[in-house]
Length: 112
Image 1 (spheres, rainbow, N blue to C red):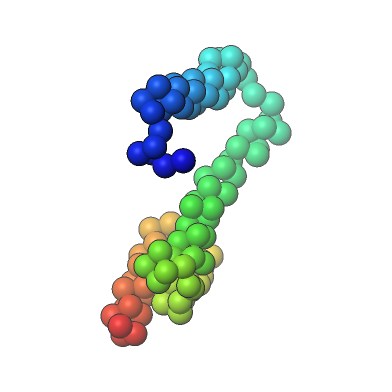
Image 2: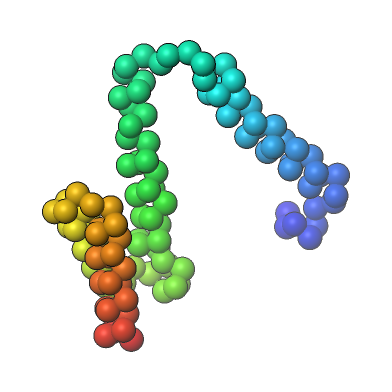
């Protein structure tokens, strides 16, 4: 069913359900446990959230880029490699992003 085929009541029901679900998820963490100290083992695991989320957002853009119709290409793979290498060497997020961006730009320019 496409959005054009969906009637207004169903659309608003879906929007309301998603809004309540999103609010409920946040309320569990902020409303119920937000003012309590968390155990050390939970805090230790929460430190890795950003490290896990960023690759999960970027990996599909490298492996199945929309710009190439879903086919991996050398420029994006090389840029991903340069980003990881710069991050491991410098331990600096901005240097890693800059190295990846420069590599991608240069290879797209050279390869066409």
